Amino acid sequence: MFRRSLVWWLLVVAAAVVFGLMTQSERVLTLAIQTFIFGALASSWNILGGFAGQVSLGHAAFFGIGALVTRELWLDGRPLAVAVAIALVATAVAASVVGVPMLRLRGIYFAVGTLALGVGVWLTAGNLWPGISSLPVDALRGYEFTGPYFMALGVVTVTVALSIWLRRSKMGLGMMAVREDEEAAAATGVNALAYKMMAFVISAVLAALAGAAFAYFSVSYYPQFPFSVVWTFEAITVVFVGGVGTIIGPLVGAAFFVTGRDVLSSTFPELQVIAFGVLFILVVLVLPGGFVEGGERLHERISRRRTSQHQQATPDATPDATARESVKMEGKEKV
Amino acid sequence: MTQLVVQSALSGLLVGGMYGLVALGLALAFGVLNVLNVAHGELVMIGGYAAFFLFSEVGVDPLLSLPLVFVILFIFGMGLYQLLFRFIVRFDIETRIKNSLLISFGLVLILQAVAVFLFTGDDRTIVTGYSSNALVIGIVRIPWIRLAGLLLAVVAAFSLEWLLNRTTFGHSIRATSEDWSLAALTGIDVRRVYMIAFAISAALAGLAGSMVSLGYSVSPSIGLSWTLKALIVIVFAGLGSMRGIVVAGMLLGLIEGLSSVWVGNAYRGVVALVVFLLVLSVRPQGLFGRGSGAHV
Image (cartoon, rainbow over all chains, first blue to last red; front, side):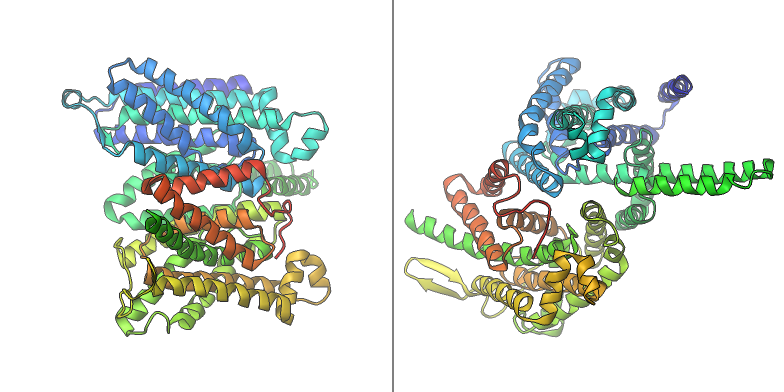
């Protein structure tokens, strides 16, 4: 099962590589890059919020640090790889430092604390770097979409691969145990704070990686922009619309969000935000598992219809499936 | 220098009263329904626009239109409850907080976008004949309109305490926030209590909005910063007393006002956030917090 899904993932990545080499349209490439960056950012939030169950509202701080450090060092003349590496290390250090006091907070206090942290860092970045950051003129003249495309693709691939690995690892299981019931997990000998800390730092570093891709891709922006709390909110929206706690959910959500924004913003920009807000609320209320759960339910219904056509003789198959579904629903409501 | 410090401290206390007023409604909704409404600041924004257009289109003075704005937002709050938050109060407390956070975040997106669409992104302020009048005491100037905001916050806090402590309906609100299932057993209509408590919360946001558009300014994007201040105030003050919330708001305003002098105006918001985070790291449950059990 795992082997087969690994083959599928490799095929998808290979298709994305071929796609990047073949496509000439700048609009399509831009959309793809934005989807990758959003997918990576959303997946990184998903590790902390979806796996470990800690709803952070300060995620943009790490996206911003990654973008800022990468951009400054890179425009300063250092190789991109060096700039990104330093940005990741800096983020890991920052996240480790703020993680300890933050993760002592529970539930709403954690959400409000991280929100305050994110807004504080955002305001400070705006104060320290007030000027706009633009690519130099000669870099602009030779601007190619291919470089950012492959960097963003690499970033999202690394993020997703790490998420897949995490979910199967002992560390990921520890995180999910903390999400389901922190007291119970601690009582059975799970070091809750350590697992939350790992989720916090991994999630922050991956967000910084997404920020690095943003810094490499963008032509000009205010350095405070990636710190904006809007990035956090949009990432959370994308995660929940796609399917919180799943691997593919954040990617599906990101693709949906970016293309939806592109289609609607050319005609009626406000409508896009309103439509997304309404959709988001509906998902939280009606489909707590997002698109992924919707797809699963649909799939289950179809396959159940098939089995019931084939096996008319086993009437107890249907109530069993319903019972299973309701058990799953109860589990989902807690997320 | 002394004048600057005293003036900044006073301005801070006045704007802090508004933080307290915004926090009152947020605390009521959180304490009674366990609903964390991050769109509370957007309700402030709507109240601000209501007062603004009542003034500019109909010509009603913003101080006279306060009851009207209260009623408008009360009805709006009932509508929001029936449309959205009614579905959340079915969950257990932990899920309520998380889901209400998500849903009200969706509401933030919608209300902001609708406001941009209807009213454009411009900053608006109500300018009346008395807007520039001020109370002058020695070396400091206190604008009457801002003083009125602080007074309103104090009056709202005392009225709310009177409602909760002295009236039968207030007792049913408190009973519901203590234990809704026990309250329901004693014959309290819990759903009605929820709806009205949420409506009062929205109406209080409306009052705050009126004073914001009179003493400060209104634009579609003001909501988040008011919500953030109110959240900080609640974490500082806990949900124990309404008066305490206004005092905590003024304290936050004072910190901001003084830091604008001593650290620099660009960092007034940052300093307040740092102080807040320091308090949280010492007291992870807030200054007066009592675990996750939320009581009014």
